[in-house]
Length: 126
Ligand SMILES: [Zn+2]
Image (cartoon, rainbow, N blue to C red; front, side, top):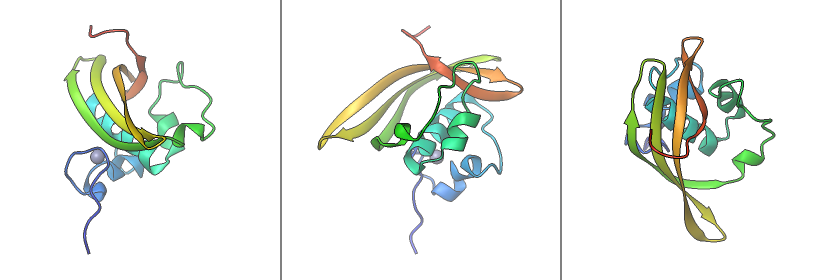
């Protein structure tokens, strides 16, 4: 039996990577790991996890349309760790009408109730 690799691109088996977070077994202790796990949540269709890892003030109404995108891979470009705020720049590739496109985002994460959560995109690298 071959082990399924984690969609986040870590090279580790899913069960030993983002599945630990997606299943609620544990919670990411830094923004980059959280970002990777959120990507895996999009890939595996885990809406409750997306809600849980989104800042309550910026979390939109999630109705499942978010999960329609066919993601193909993730690349974390760089990340900047802070005590209460962190920034992660990433590229996430997806397929649209048979063509590969990329979502390039610089995301802001904050520590909220002792957990890292996604706040939203920034206009540029801080
Ligand atoms: Zn992973």
